[in-house]
Each structure stands twice: as structure tokens, then as C-alpha cells.
Amino acid sequence: MDLVTVEGVIDPVVARFVERVVADGARRHVEAVVVLLDTPGGLDVSMRQIVQSILGSAVPVVVFVAPSGARAGSAGVFLTMAAHVAAMAPGTNVGAAHPVAFGGAPIPEAQEEKIVNDAAAYIRSLASRQGRNADWAEKAVRQSVSVTDREALRLKVIDLVARDVDELLVRLDGRKVATARGEIVLRTRDAERRDVKMSAPERLLHALVDPNIAYLLLILGLWALVAEFSHPGAILPGVAGVLSLILALVAFGSLPVNWAGVALLVLAIVLFLLDIKVTGFGLTVGGVVAFVLGTLMLYRPFKPAPPAMPRLAVDLRLMGVLLLGLLAFFLFVVSKAIQAQRVPVDRGMRSLVGARGRAITALAPGGTVLVRGEEWSAEAEQGPIPAGEDVTVVGSKGLTLRVVATSKPSEGSP
Image (cartoon, rainbow, N blue to C red; front, side):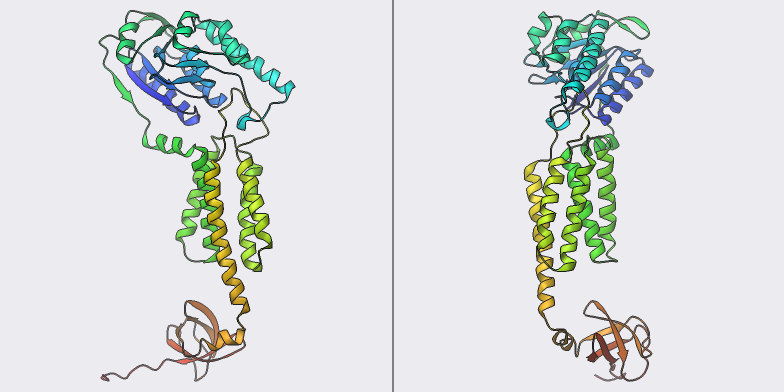
């Protein structure tokens, strides 16, 4: 007896997980696979993938809406209707499967009619196949009706009510179910149980599918790349940025993403970066507007899909924290750039006189030196200086430093 828990949004990761468990259970000839379900809904394609694995399974699949307080909403209703045995715990509910557009946006009337009719026909076929109340199932799609565990049992929406898994297995014992390999009599009372968990990669992918985590990875990835481009050679920001963006794209592959929102977020970062280069605050306003619009549009695609995932949106508190962080960072850099512009060049160059550095290239007489962490064009004043030699700044000519080899103490000197 395999027990698998499905909580939260039904996404492609969950679908592949359940499909794997059902297939593995069939190979090992387990007595049944029990799915403990608590979901507000999920992606249509993921729901249908699970339904197909249930209908094609040689091992009985029991959907148990549990524990108390759980629900089977939207896509969860379809899974309940498809199960060989449908059960609920006291204090649970099932229903409200009316299709809605991703992000909660209204569906155009003509398109909504087609989507609702398709979903209604599909859920009727599932309910009829398993001998359940097809009329109620259609109402769950067309009118978003929802019922409690007792009402569901009375209306023949489910097969039984059980307090917990122990009672469920006792009540399942001796029940006949029709699977893909024929009719099976369940022997669950003393069946050995095995809790099946997601693998580490599956848990990681499932966590990434969280809309806020995917959004955070996108912003941090873009921010890290900006840091790498601003300070070439740092390496770590570049690696972290690329990794974050790859993980964000993996997550977006399982989420209803509006790529116009992604483009606006990229534009916002570019505008903030340009504001540093031109040393002004004009582009900051445009960056803020693009950032806010991109965040609000990120999970509002133009194309709806039934039965839709519950409303997806970035947490506005997260958006506020990231926006304030970006503004603080870029405004600090811009202010420093403006201050640097106000310092006369000759005054800045004079401050380097006496500073010590190192010759990056050979000076014969011209070359490049590193002084105070910055690279400068330089000319040797007193003959060629080999690369790697320590140098001292003695003056400047325009933006070119004049340097001499730093004298070293003679051997034996104190």
C-alpha cells in the first residue's frame, strides 16, 4: 500500500511525481495507491496527466481528501471524480471547478463558453465512468458548487467518509473496483504501508514553481549580472546570476508567465544601469514604472487555460522590498558618480602623487599600471620598467600618470 501526499497547487512536478508513484505501484503489485489530497487547483495539463495515469492504472488509485480542513478545489475535483475510490475526511469540502483565467482576469464570453463546455463534458465523462453523480460534477464546473464531506456522500459524489487513513483502509477492505487490468477486490485491512515522498530533485523543482521564488530568482539573477558587468572579473556575481536565471527559466516553464512582464523587468534593470552611466536621476523613474508594471503583469498571460490555477501574483511586499533595495543600490551608485564628476580632474590626479602601485605591462615608456585598485595609463620617467615592478606616481600629464620604479631597500639594510 503506497501513500502519497499531494498538497498545494497541482503543477507539472506534482503530476510527474504522482504518475511515477502509480507506475511504480503497478510494477510492484501493491494493493492500492492512496493519494492524500489537499489542493485549491492547478494546471489543466497537469491535472489531465494525473487523470490519464489513474484511468490507465492496473493498480487501484484511491483519492482521499484529508486531513480535516483540506479541500479538493478546481483541478482537485477532476482527480476526485477520476479515482477508483473517492473518500473524504470529516470537515473537508470538494467543488468549485469553474474555469477562470490565470491571474483572475475575466475570460471573453465566447471563449469562456467553449472552455466551460469542454471542462463540463470532461468531468461528466469521469464521473459517469466511476459511477458518481455526473449532474453534480457538471454543476461544479458550470456553477462552482461546492459540498461538504457528508453532502458529497449523500449526493454520491464520493464513495465513503473516513476519519483517517486507518479507518479508510478498514472501510476499503473487500471493496470491488474496476481497473485497467480488470476487477479487483481490495485487501487493505492488514496491508503493509509505505509513505512515498518526492525525491530531492522533485522537491527542488516543486519549490521553484512557487511564483514568488521564481520572481526572486529572476530579479537576483539580473542584479548579479549587473554587478558582474559593472566589475568585470569578479566571476562570483556572474556565476550566481547565470545560475539564478536558469533556475528562474525552469520555474517559468511550469508557470503561466506573461513574457511581456519579464521584458519589462529586464528593461527596468537596464534603465537603472543606464542611470549610473549618464549620472542622473531621469531614467530612475522609468525604471521604477517598468519594474512595477513588469511585476504586476508577470503572471497575467493573455491566454487562459481551464481549469485554471488559483490566482497567481507576486507578493506585493516582496516587490516592495526588492524595489527599495534596487533603488537604494542604484541611487547610492549614481550619487557617488555625480560626486566624482564634480571633482576637478587635475585635483583628482594630484591626489595620486606619491601613491604606489604595480606595472601591469612593461613601461617602455608607455604602458598600464594598477594604482589604488584602478588601472591607469602611465609613462615611465626614468627608463623602462618591467611588468610586475612596483612603481610610485610622481605626477600626471592629462589622464596619464608619470611613474618611476619604486626604490627597494638594499640588502642588509635595517
